[in-house]
Length: 463
Image 1 (cartoon, rainbow, N blue to C red):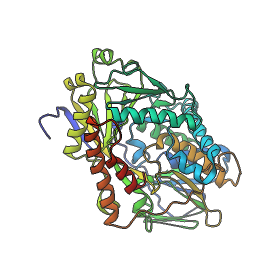
Image 2: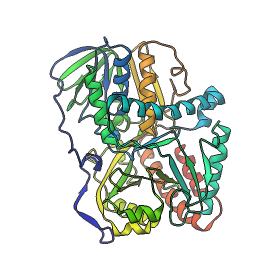
Image 3: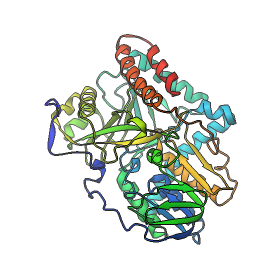
Image 4: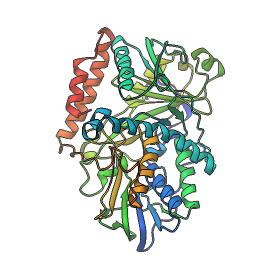
């Protein structure tokens, strides 16, 4: 590692994520050991699969629901994310409105806001201590071009039904002192969580309801009413795929969602003087308007968990499952962290890790269930899955139970999206996007508007 990145004596790279440091990385529980018959088989014990199982058993306790997980509950993005329980829509308002109308897009946004409080309510009900604090989110702009995009985002939010109470411009430094900030917004629709605690607590709540989670059980093929593993086959009326960034591992689905990498570093605990000097008095989340974006939280034990784009994509939709992070990515994240908060340079990096998120070709999340085959899925959260998975779980519940509700008619239900291009076009497109975004951010330091290179990157990838 570069000498300019101070590492703690106990520094860890990978090993899933820092979020498991206090409890230890779980050992997978017993795998499937025989053929089974069930009402619902859920493939994947991340947030999507766990919420789906939770709400199904709550609504219909007599259902036989099983969850099949290759590693352990919360191994993927659910145990590695930045801990943003955010109301941001996982997709484009305009694209949902194009197929269902503007009011339906607004309704989807309102459901996203409500889902934050739903997650908090379930955690309180089930006794899940996930370090949740709903102190909102601050987004900052550090260039003139970013400030223009920030103001445009507020205007767009107004057009889609958000009010001054949902999102507003604030003075830079009003809530957080970020070096070089020239504009900022604040929204109350975000809460900090500890991702692994939420995943593990939710898994226990699901087990308490009578759902069996078979860990260490990779699913090798999904067909109508069937989930096949090396240790047995599960036959079920419904088979739900909840595999998000790992979907490309399943036969025939390599081009369904792009497994895009995001990476994080976390510091050692920072002193009270740091939090006082930066005005970071609560648990506000922090983001920015750069193309090569960042996201951060103040952890419950006073560290900064700071994330951004890592090595973007591995050829052929491959996934580095253990979360190892490249040296250049660690350096870039540390440089950006200390550029935002120069006083953080006195700290050191305790842990780095990476994970994959699922990206559809149109960057819009979707939920689907085919009544004829019993096959269903939800995902493509593009990094907004902590909240969106809860809405997906409740929507899948209603679809599986055959109930027409306000959730089953939301515009993301049944959304059809074309596949990503075959290789090498997929690899070339994603890496071109990242390169163009980096150059665009550099150029925007001295220009008043969004770089044409960023617009080109958006056009190439459909962002």
